[in-house]
Length: 418
Image (cartoon, rainbow, N blue to C red; front, side, top):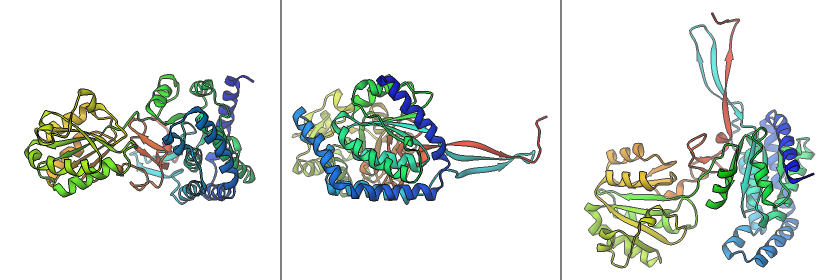
Protein backbone atom coordinates (compact mmCIF):
# COMPACT_ATOMS: atom_id res chain seq x y z
CA UNK A 1 0.00 0.00 0.00
CA UNK A 2 1.04 3.61 -0.55
CA UNK A 3 1.65 5.90 2.43
CA UNK A 4 -1.70 7.59 1.75
CA UNK A 5 -3.51 4.23 1.78
CA UNK A 6 -1.75 3.14 4.98
CA UNK A 7 -2.64 6.35 6.81
CA UNK A 8 -6.26 6.14 5.65
CA UNK A 9 -6.43 2.55 6.90
CA UNK A 10 -4.95 3.51 10.28
CA UNK A 11 -7.47 6.36 10.65
CA UNK A 12 -10.38 4.12 9.59
CA UNK A 13 -9.42 1.42 12.09
CA UNK A 14 -9.03 4.04 14.83
CA UNK A 15 -12.55 5.33 14.09
CA UNK A 16 -13.99 1.83 14.36
CA UNK A 17 -12.08 1.20 17.60
CA UNK A 18 -13.32 4.49 19.08
CA UNK A 19 -16.87 3.12 19.25
CA UNK A 20 -15.75 0.19 21.41
CA UNK A 21 -13.54 2.42 23.54
CA UNK A 22 -16.40 4.83 24.28
CA UNK A 23 -18.33 1.93 25.86
CA UNK A 24 -15.57 0.92 28.29
CA UNK A 25 -16.25 1.33 31.99
CA UNK A 26 -14.05 3.50 34.17
CA UNK A 27 -12.89 0.37 36.00
CA UNK A 28 -11.63 -1.26 32.80
CA UNK A 29 -9.92 1.92 31.60
CA UNK A 30 -8.13 2.34 34.92
CA UNK A 31 -7.08 -1.32 34.95
CA UNK A 32 -5.68 -0.85 31.45
CA UNK A 33 -3.63 2.20 32.44
CA UNK A 34 -2.20 0.55 35.55
CA UNK A 35 -1.20 -2.55 33.55
CA UNK A 36 0.37 -0.28 30.95
CA UNK A 37 2.41 1.44 33.65
CA UNK A 38 3.61 -1.88 35.05
CA UNK A 39 4.50 -3.13 31.56
CA UNK A 40 6.55 -0.03 30.76
CA UNK A 41 8.59 -0.42 33.93
CA UNK A 42 9.09 -4.14 33.27
CA UNK A 43 10.37 -3.32 29.78
CA UNK A 44 12.92 -0.74 30.97
CA UNK A 45 15.99 -2.60 29.57
CA UNK A 46 14.32 -2.99 26.16
CA UNK A 47 13.23 0.66 26.05
CA UNK A 48 16.72 1.88 26.94
CA UNK A 49 18.19 -0.21 24.09
CA UNK A 50 15.66 1.12 21.55
CA UNK A 51 16.18 4.67 22.77
CA UNK A 52 19.95 4.26 22.38
CA UNK A 53 19.34 3.67 18.65
CA UNK A 54 17.57 7.03 18.42
CA UNK A 55 20.25 8.80 20.44
CA UNK A 56 23.01 7.41 18.22
CA UNK A 57 21.16 8.49 15.09
CA UNK A 58 20.58 11.91 16.65
CA UNK A 59 24.27 12.39 17.38
CA UNK A 60 25.10 11.40 13.81
CA UNK A 61 22.61 13.99 12.53
CA UNK A 62 24.15 16.62 14.80
CA UNK A 63 21.19 17.19 17.11
CA UNK A 64 21.91 19.72 19.85
CA UNK A 65 22.57 18.67 23.42
CA UNK A 66 19.17 20.11 24.38
CA UNK A 67 17.41 18.00 21.73
CA UNK A 68 19.30 14.89 22.78
CA UNK A 69 18.31 15.52 26.38
CA UNK A 70 14.62 15.73 25.40
CA UNK A 71 15.02 12.51 23.43
CA UNK A 72 16.80 10.49 26.10
CA UNK A 73 15.10 7.74 28.14
CA UNK A 74 16.72 6.29 31.23
CA UNK A 75 15.23 4.18 34.05
CA UNK A 76 14.23 7.31 35.99
CA UNK A 77 12.35 8.80 33.03
CA UNK A 78 10.69 5.49 32.22
CA UNK A 79 9.48 5.29 35.81
CA UNK A 80 8.20 8.84 35.40
CA UNK A 81 6.20 7.76 32.33
CA UNK A 82 4.75 4.83 34.27
CA UNK A 83 3.87 7.03 37.23
CA UNK A 84 2.12 9.48 34.88
CA UNK A 85 -0.10 6.65 33.61
CA UNK A 86 -0.95 5.67 37.19
CA UNK A 87 -1.77 9.32 37.94
CA UNK A 88 -4.19 9.47 35.01
CA UNK A 89 -5.80 6.24 36.22
CA UNK A 90 -6.50 7.96 39.53
CA UNK A 91 -8.25 10.96 37.96
CA UNK A 92 -12.06 11.26 37.77
CA UNK A 93 -13.51 9.94 34.52
CA UNK A 94 -15.43 12.74 32.75
CA UNK A 95 -17.25 10.46 30.29
CA UNK A 96 -20.96 10.19 31.03
CA UNK A 97 -21.04 13.09 33.49
CA UNK A 98 -24.29 15.05 33.28
CA UNK A 99 -23.19 18.66 33.69
CA UNK A 100 -26.65 20.29 33.71
CA UNK A 101 -30.29 19.26 33.85
CA UNK A 102 -33.36 21.49 33.66
CA UNK A 103 -37.14 21.16 33.20
CA UNK A 104 -39.04 22.81 30.37
CA UNK A 105 -42.62 24.12 30.71
CA UNK A 106 -43.87 21.05 28.83
CA UNK A 107 -42.24 18.80 31.49
CA UNK A 108 -39.37 17.70 29.22
CA UNK A 109 -36.14 17.18 31.19
CA UNK A 110 -33.19 18.51 29.21
CA UNK A 111 -29.57 17.92 30.09
CA UNK A 112 -25.99 17.95 28.81
CA UNK A 113 -23.75 14.88 29.06
CA UNK A 114 -20.02 14.59 28.50
CA UNK A 115 -18.94 12.30 25.67
CA UNK A 116 -15.57 11.56 24.00
CA UNK A 117 -14.53 13.63 20.99
CA UNK A 118 -13.91 10.41 19.03
CA UNK A 119 -10.47 10.14 17.39
CA UNK A 120 -7.65 12.51 18.31
CA UNK A 121 -4.49 12.90 16.24
CA UNK A 122 -1.28 13.94 17.99
CA UNK A 123 1.68 15.26 15.97
CA UNK A 124 4.75 15.73 18.15
CA UNK A 125 8.52 16.05 18.27
CA UNK A 126 11.38 14.66 20.33
CA UNK A 127 10.04 13.57 23.70
CA UNK A 128 9.11 9.85 23.62
CA UNK A 129 7.18 10.23 26.88
CA UNK A 130 4.47 12.06 24.88
CA UNK A 131 3.62 8.67 23.32
CA UNK A 132 2.58 7.33 26.72
CA UNK A 133 1.18 10.58 28.16
CA UNK A 134 -1.03 11.37 25.15
CA UNK A 135 -2.22 7.78 24.91
CA UNK A 136 -3.18 7.72 28.59
CA UNK A 137 -5.17 10.96 28.46
CA UNK A 138 -6.95 10.08 25.22
CA UNK A 139 -7.83 6.52 26.26
CA UNK A 140 -9.03 7.53 29.74
CA UNK A 141 -11.34 10.13 28.17
CA UNK A 142 -12.74 7.47 25.81
CA UNK A 143 -10.97 8.68 22.66
CA UNK A 144 -9.02 6.64 20.15
CA UNK A 145 -5.67 8.24 19.35
CA UNK A 146 -3.47 8.31 16.25
CA UNK A 147 0.12 9.27 17.12
CA UNK A 148 2.74 10.61 14.76
CA UNK A 149 6.03 11.27 16.54
CA UNK A 150 9.19 12.77 15.09
CA UNK A 151 11.68 10.78 13.05
CA UNK A 152 14.33 11.37 15.72
CA UNK A 153 12.37 9.20 18.21
CA UNK A 154 10.93 6.54 15.90
CA UNK A 155 12.47 3.48 17.63
CA UNK A 156 11.52 4.72 21.12
CA UNK A 157 7.98 5.59 20.06
CA UNK A 158 7.43 2.25 18.32
CA UNK A 159 8.68 0.35 21.38
CA UNK A 160 6.43 2.28 23.78
CA UNK A 161 3.36 1.96 21.55
CA UNK A 162 3.92 -1.79 21.10
CA UNK A 163 4.06 -2.30 24.88
CA UNK A 164 0.84 -0.31 25.42
CA UNK A 165 -0.94 -2.13 22.59
CA UNK A 166 0.08 -5.46 24.12
CA UNK A 167 -1.85 -4.58 27.28
CA UNK A 168 -4.90 -3.60 25.22
CA UNK A 169 -4.80 -6.91 23.36
CA UNK A 170 -4.54 -8.78 26.67
CA UNK A 171 -7.69 -7.01 27.94
CA UNK A 172 -9.64 -7.48 24.71
CA UNK A 173 -9.56 -3.77 23.83
CA UNK A 174 -9.07 -2.99 20.11
CA UNK A 175 -5.40 -2.17 19.58
CA UNK A 176 -6.32 0.28 16.81
CA UNK A 177 -7.61 2.62 19.53
CA UNK A 178 -3.93 3.44 20.04
CA UNK A 179 -2.25 3.72 16.64
CA UNK A 180 1.22 4.95 15.77
CA UNK A 181 1.99 6.01 12.21
CA UNK A 182 5.04 3.79 11.71
CA UNK A 183 7.03 5.70 9.08
CA UNK A 184 8.92 8.98 9.19
CA UNK A 185 8.23 10.55 5.79
CA UNK A 186 6.55 13.97 5.98
CA UNK A 187 3.89 12.62 3.61
CA UNK A 188 2.60 10.63 6.59
CA UNK A 189 1.77 13.84 8.45
CA UNK A 190 0.19 15.44 5.37
CA UNK A 191 -2.02 12.42 4.77
CA UNK A 192 -3.02 12.29 8.44
CA UNK A 193 -4.12 15.94 8.26
CA UNK A 194 -6.48 15.11 5.36
CA UNK A 195 -8.54 12.55 7.31
CA UNK A 196 -11.33 14.95 8.31
CA UNK A 197 -13.99 12.23 8.03
CA UNK A 198 -12.14 9.96 10.47
CA UNK A 199 -10.11 12.16 12.87
CA UNK A 200 -11.97 14.75 14.95
CA UNK A 201 -9.16 16.87 16.37
CA UNK A 202 -5.43 17.43 15.81
CA UNK A 203 -3.12 18.47 18.65
CA UNK A 204 0.45 19.38 17.65
CA UNK A 205 3.15 19.27 20.33
CA UNK A 206 6.49 20.88 19.52
CA UNK A 207 8.11 24.06 18.25
CA UNK A 208 6.41 26.94 16.49
CA UNK A 209 7.50 25.76 13.02
CA UNK A 210 5.86 22.34 13.52
CA UNK A 211 2.64 23.88 14.81
CA UNK A 212 2.43 26.35 11.90
CA UNK A 213 3.04 23.51 9.43
CA UNK A 214 0.17 21.53 10.95
CA UNK A 215 -2.20 24.51 10.98
CA UNK A 216 -1.41 25.44 7.38
CA UNK A 217 -1.99 21.90 6.08
CA UNK A 218 -4.78 20.51 8.25
CA UNK A 219 -8.37 19.98 7.11
CA UNK A 220 -9.17 19.00 10.70
CA UNK A 221 -9.65 21.45 13.62
CA UNK A 222 -6.34 22.10 15.40
CA UNK A 223 -5.76 22.91 19.07
CA UNK A 224 -2.55 24.90 19.28
CA UNK A 225 -0.36 27.49 20.81
CA UNK A 226 2.41 29.00 18.73
CA UNK A 227 4.46 30.48 21.55
CA UNK A 228 4.35 31.88 25.05
CA UNK A 229 5.03 35.62 25.23
CA UNK A 230 4.21 35.87 28.95
CA UNK A 231 4.01 39.21 30.78
CA UNK A 232 4.28 40.45 34.35
CA UNK A 233 3.10 43.90 35.44
CA UNK A 234 4.51 45.43 38.61
CA UNK A 235 1.80 47.81 39.80
CA UNK A 236 2.45 50.93 41.88
CA UNK A 237 1.22 49.15 45.03
CA UNK A 238 3.32 46.01 44.53
CA UNK A 239 5.37 44.54 47.35
CA UNK A 240 8.91 44.78 45.95
CA UNK A 241 10.20 41.65 47.67
CA UNK A 242 7.25 39.63 46.38
CA UNK A 243 7.61 41.07 42.90
CA UNK A 244 11.31 40.23 42.72
CA UNK A 245 10.68 36.69 43.94
CA UNK A 246 7.94 36.12 41.36
CA UNK A 247 9.97 37.59 38.49
CA UNK A 248 13.03 35.49 39.33
CA UNK A 249 10.98 32.30 39.49
CA UNK A 250 9.01 33.04 36.31
CA UNK A 251 12.14 33.91 34.31
CA UNK A 252 14.86 31.64 35.64
CA UNK A 253 13.38 28.41 37.05
CA UNK A 254 13.03 26.91 33.54
CA UNK A 255 13.62 29.62 30.94
CA UNK A 256 13.12 27.25 27.99
CA UNK A 257 9.42 26.49 28.59
CA UNK A 258 6.32 28.20 27.22
CA UNK A 259 5.11 29.60 30.57
CA UNK A 260 8.40 31.33 31.38
CA UNK A 261 8.29 35.13 31.72
CA UNK A 262 9.44 37.06 28.63
CA UNK A 263 8.32 40.69 29.19
CA UNK A 264 8.21 42.79 32.38
CA UNK A 265 6.13 45.97 32.66
CA UNK A 266 6.72 48.43 35.53
CA UNK A 267 4.44 51.24 36.72
CA UNK A 268 6.23 54.58 36.25
CA UNK A 269 5.54 55.62 39.85
CA UNK A 270 7.82 52.87 41.22
CA UNK A 271 10.33 52.64 38.36
CA UNK A 272 13.07 54.68 40.06
CA UNK A 273 13.02 52.58 43.22
CA UNK A 274 12.08 49.12 41.95
CA UNK A 275 14.16 48.82 38.79
CA UNK A 276 17.63 49.11 40.38
CA UNK A 277 16.56 46.61 43.06
CA UNK A 278 15.26 43.87 40.78
CA UNK A 279 17.83 44.53 38.01
CA UNK A 280 20.70 43.71 40.36
CA UNK A 281 19.00 40.50 41.46
CA UNK A 282 18.56 39.36 37.84
CA UNK A 283 22.07 40.41 36.87
CA UNK A 284 23.39 38.14 39.63
CA UNK A 285 21.50 35.30 37.88
CA UNK A 286 23.03 36.18 34.46
CA UNK A 287 19.73 37.42 33.01
CA UNK A 288 20.22 39.82 30.10
CA UNK A 289 17.86 42.80 30.31
CA UNK A 290 16.56 44.68 27.28
CA UNK A 291 14.64 47.86 28.06
CA UNK A 292 12.93 50.90 26.65
CA UNK A 293 14.53 54.33 27.11
CA UNK A 294 12.87 54.96 30.48
CA UNK A 295 13.87 51.55 31.84
CA UNK A 296 17.50 52.00 30.74
CA UNK A 297 17.69 55.26 32.71
CA UNK A 298 17.43 53.22 35.91
CA UNK A 299 19.25 50.10 34.65
CA UNK A 300 22.17 51.36 32.53
CA UNK A 301 23.47 47.79 32.15
CA UNK A 302 20.39 46.92 30.07
CA UNK A 303 20.52 46.82 26.27
CA UNK A 304 18.10 49.05 24.36
CA UNK A 305 15.01 47.09 23.33
CA UNK A 306 13.77 47.02 19.74
CA UNK A 307 10.20 46.58 18.48
CA UNK A 308 10.95 42.88 17.91
CA UNK A 309 11.70 42.38 21.61
CA UNK A 310 8.09 43.05 22.64
CA UNK A 311 6.83 40.06 20.64
CA UNK A 312 9.81 37.78 21.36
CA UNK A 313 9.66 34.36 22.99
CA UNK A 314 13.30 34.10 24.04
CA UNK A 315 13.22 30.72 25.84
CA UNK A 316 16.53 31.74 27.44
CA UNK A 317 17.82 34.11 30.11
CA UNK A 318 16.72 37.33 28.38
CA UNK A 319 13.96 39.63 29.65
CA UNK A 320 12.34 42.55 27.84
CA UNK A 321 11.43 45.41 30.22
CA UNK A 322 9.28 48.51 29.78
CA UNK A 323 8.01 51.33 31.97
CA UNK A 324 4.29 52.08 31.50
CA UNK A 325 2.23 55.00 32.72
CA UNK A 326 -0.39 53.01 34.61
CA UNK A 327 -2.59 49.90 34.56
CA UNK A 328 -4.20 51.00 31.29
CA UNK A 329 -0.77 51.18 29.68
CA UNK A 330 0.09 47.69 30.90
CA UNK A 331 -3.19 46.20 29.64
CA UNK A 332 -2.83 47.93 26.27
CA UNK A 333 0.72 46.60 25.85
CA UNK A 334 -0.30 43.06 26.80
CA UNK A 335 -3.34 43.03 24.53
CA UNK A 336 -1.15 44.22 21.64
CA UNK A 337 1.77 41.79 22.04
CA UNK A 338 0.42 38.87 24.05
CA UNK A 339 0.33 35.34 22.63
CA UNK A 340 -2.67 34.65 24.94
CA UNK A 341 -0.66 32.33 27.17
CA UNK A 342 0.08 33.59 30.73
CA UNK A 343 0.03 37.06 32.30
CA UNK A 344 0.44 38.20 35.93
CA UNK A 345 -0.18 41.41 37.85
CA UNK A 346 1.76 41.99 41.06
CA UNK A 347 -0.27 44.39 43.16
CA UNK A 348 -1.83 45.14 46.54
CA UNK A 349 -4.73 46.98 44.91
CA UNK A 350 -7.79 44.72 44.74
CA UNK A 351 -9.65 46.81 42.16
CA UNK A 352 -6.61 46.82 39.87
CA UNK A 353 -6.25 43.05 40.19
CA UNK A 354 -9.91 42.58 39.21
CA UNK A 355 -9.60 44.91 36.23
CA UNK A 356 -6.52 43.00 35.08
CA UNK A 357 -8.34 39.66 35.36
CA UNK A 358 -11.37 40.97 33.44
CA UNK A 359 -9.57 42.88 30.69
CA UNK A 360 -6.58 40.63 29.92
CA UNK A 361 -7.91 37.74 27.85
CA UNK A 362 -5.06 35.24 27.97
CA UNK A 363 -5.57 31.56 28.78
CA UNK A 364 -4.31 32.04 32.34
CA UNK A 365 -4.33 35.36 34.23
CA UNK A 366 -2.67 35.40 37.65
CA UNK A 367 -2.54 37.76 40.59
CA UNK A 368 0.65 37.76 42.69
CA UNK A 369 1.87 34.36 41.46
CA UNK A 370 4.45 33.10 38.95
CA UNK A 371 3.46 32.45 35.34
CA UNK A 372 5.06 29.01 35.82
CA UNK A 373 1.80 27.87 37.44
CA UNK A 374 0.02 27.77 34.05
CA UNK A 375 0.38 24.00 33.89
CA UNK A 376 -2.25 21.28 34.13
CA UNK A 377 -0.62 19.54 37.08
CA UNK A 378 -0.11 22.80 38.97
CA UNK A 379 -3.70 23.93 38.38
CA UNK A 380 -5.17 20.68 39.68
CA UNK A 381 -6.03 18.95 36.39
CA UNK A 382 -3.72 16.07 37.30
CA UNK A 383 -2.24 15.95 33.80
CA UNK A 384 -2.49 17.87 30.54
CA UNK A 385 -2.18 17.08 26.87
CA UNK A 386 -0.99 20.60 26.14
CA UNK A 387 -1.85 24.27 26.56
CA UNK A 388 -4.25 25.82 24.09
CA UNK A 389 -4.27 29.49 23.15
CA UNK A 390 -7.13 28.73 20.75
CA UNK A 391 -10.41 29.83 22.33
CA UNK A 392 -12.36 27.05 20.55
CA UNK A 393 -12.84 24.43 21.82
CA UNK A 394 -10.55 24.74 24.83
CA UNK A 395 -8.50 27.60 26.31
CA UNK A 396 -5.52 26.99 28.59
CA UNK A 397 -4.13 23.68 29.90
CA UNK A 398 -6.14 20.75 28.51
CA UNK A 399 -6.93 17.89 30.87
CA UNK A 400 -9.31 14.96 30.58
CA UNK A 401 -12.44 17.10 30.60
CA UNK A 402 -11.12 19.11 27.65
CA UNK A 403 -10.84 15.92 25.59
CA UNK A 404 -14.62 15.56 25.76
CA UNK A 405 -17.54 17.50 24.38
CA UNK A 406 -21.18 17.53 25.47
CA UNK A 407 -24.38 16.30 23.86
CA UNK A 408 -27.96 17.15 24.76
CA UNK A 409 -30.02 14.45 26.43
CA UNK A 410 -33.81 14.78 26.70
CA UNK A 411 -36.24 12.76 28.88
CA UNK A 412 -39.89 12.90 27.92
CA UNK A 413 -43.18 11.23 28.75
CA UNK A 414 -44.89 11.18 25.38
CA UNK A 415 -44.57 14.90 24.56
CA UNK A 416 -44.99 15.94 20.92
CA UNK A 417 -44.37 19.35 19.41
CA UNK A 418 -47.43 21.37 18.50
